[in-house]
Amino acid sequence: MIITMIENATELEVSQIVEHLAAGEFQSRISQNGRVHIAALGKGRAEEIEKLRRFSSVADVAKAEQPYVLASWQMKPERSVVRVKAVEIGAEKAVIMAGPCSVESREQTLSTARFVAANGAVMLRGGAYKPRTSPYEFQGLGIEALKILREAGDETGLAVVTEVMSEEDVETVGQYADMFQVGARNMQNFALLRKLAKTRTPILLKRGASATIKEWLLAAEYLLAGGNENVVLCERGIKTFETATRNTLDLAAVALAKELTHLPVIVDPSHGTGVRSLVAPCAKAAIAVGADGVIVEVHPNPKEALSDGAQSLTFENFAALTAQIAQPIRSIASLN
Ligand code: PEP
Ligand code: MN
Image (cartoon, rainbow, N blue to C red):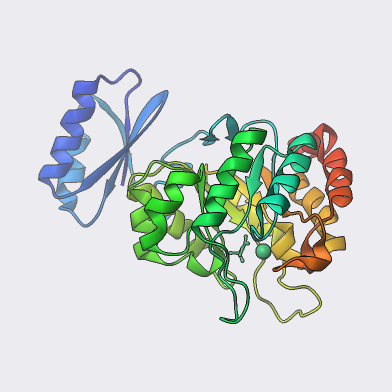
């Protein structure tokens, strides 16, 4: 259930409702954007909800329309803007995150960071812990990579996003990263989500390759329910019968997710297509359907990349893309 308080409800009135809900064995989550909305969560005593209508501080009591209560517009009728250092995701300007699939060396990461920072990126991506399909493939440099990312971020001013693969790495990754990435393979690793929810570090939640939109939003709900509101969704392609592309980039899911949730949504056309030449057209399409930004893989020499070379942009490709993603495309999206 979602309780909407009257305009200008006082803190005391809000805490009275929260106490009433606690007595009825409901948990509460509050969202405050002009009006206060209180979500009554869990399996409490329904009759206590009915009594809420008698409080003069309560304007409305409504059934939650979606199972992902906290992620829904009903709970927060205002776009969420997630701040990662100075970067605002979900605000007017589409954000560009870029960097190598994997951190391979200091030189490779620093040169990429310098180039993308000078050419429109505001965040640096790079994998330190890599979820590779084969155990014999490059698994990432771990802590050494985290240190390189931090150095590159500090030098260039780019905020750093990197994947955390397991619960035991949350603390270490959190010491170096400005934003955690939950990879597609871990979207429903609920123990990891619960642990990340206890931090205040922003989280980029990738859609699982076989996850429905509802499952993706419910994974986000784990983070919100656990106390971390700084969640950004990322569409990165799903598995279909098609084999010509690595995944099938589901841009309709982006437009739909924006209808279903107040959370920002970005797109990863690199993993979404697996094909270098398709990254720029799909990045532009992503912005046109309303994405709040894109995350793309860039490598100084894709042929030599230790992972995902076939989908990595060269520096030249990246500069050409960002020149095109600027303001005009965002205005097409705002015409919708
Ligand atoms: C990545 O971003 O390098 C990655 C492994 O992404 P995904 O989890 O979407 O496959
Ligand atoms: Mn990759």
